[in-house]
Length: 181
Image (tube, rainbow, N blue to C red; front, side, top):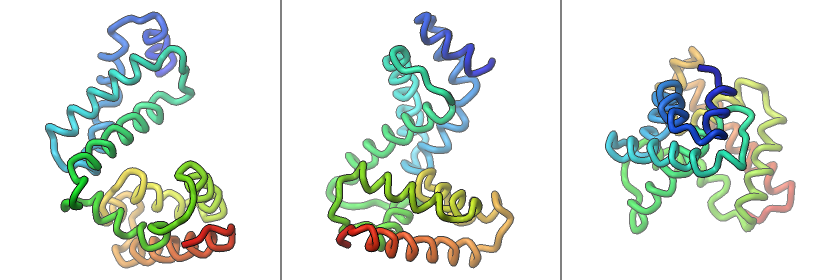
């Protein structure tokens, strides 16, 4: 079913909207949650919570791309669960590794989270398309290095080097924008 039809079901408060959204996007949402949580049970709960959040927020929201909307809900719910589970100590998993990598350029940034997000987005739009895509796959979707190498048909060393250079560039960009790091 097309996204516009699924969104119409949400607007009509038709419960089949959740079933249709799940049928179309469950694998996508599960991948996002699994990359962060590394637990099938926790991931399933977050994905189900994302469908409930969509039910509660459509209407009034009317997303342009349902996949992005559900992905963002899933990611935010998974991040919240991850933070709750690891409040005292970071656990293992790909998400913790990617956070550690990104910490080198933004850990001590003295700036509001929303403004930091806008600056990162602005920086990424100055980068080549493939660099942006690799960065987003690693730090938004928490894909492993090996998953990225397969997706973009690159060597592991090229992906690691690209991410390292991008993080260095981001740090320099943030400093140029007056962000204390």
